[in-house]
Amino acid sequence: MRKINTFTLNITVAILDFLYQGRHFQRFWVLEEIARAPYFAFLSVLHLRESLGLRGQWHIYLMKQHFEQSVNETEHLEIMESRGGNAYWIDRFLARHLVLVYYWINVVYYWVSPRAAYHLSYEIEIHAMETYGKYLAEVDSSDIDICSVMNDELHHAQELYEAMRIIDPDRLTVREKDRKPFPPDVSDLNSVTLVSSVEQK
Image (tube, rainbow, N blue to C red; front, top):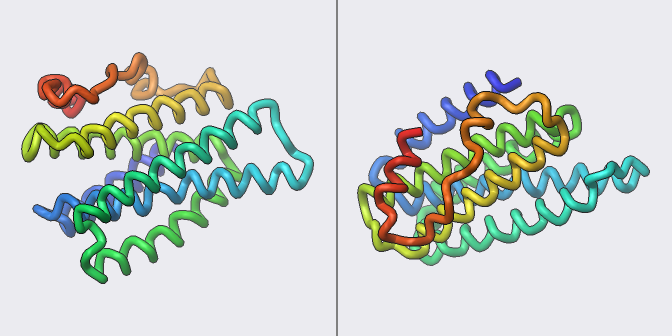
């Protein structure tokens, strides 16, 4: 499943790189629109399991985490909207159709293999963090909002790592183990060297 996740992520990134060259905030908005879908899907499945009497040991903890993550991603979305990220109908059309497909994929994925679903979201959050880091390193190192969003993505990746550890602690991949401990808080805008080093991993 990890190979499928990696292949899917690489193809998606390549497409977004092609479509959004030089259009940073449009790309960020699309990413944030899509980024909420897994957390909505995880919550939906957890609610369904609850309704079927299948509450697990970590059920309430995971529900709280995913609700907070979905709210935080919506806050990111609003930041990108304030920057004009959703100004063009084609971007709105693309993102809102992709998110419908991605949501249902994650519903099925999480029901069948929660750990694999977490792994995919983990890799996406790492990619998002690196994308924002690249913007700060190469375009505008003084952008407070983007630095804050990047820091949030790091925290989400940590939370997803913890969810994977809870579900199956013996199957962490080499990449996941290498990512722990995660980089420290990067809210300091002077940490350009840190941003660059994170990017190179």
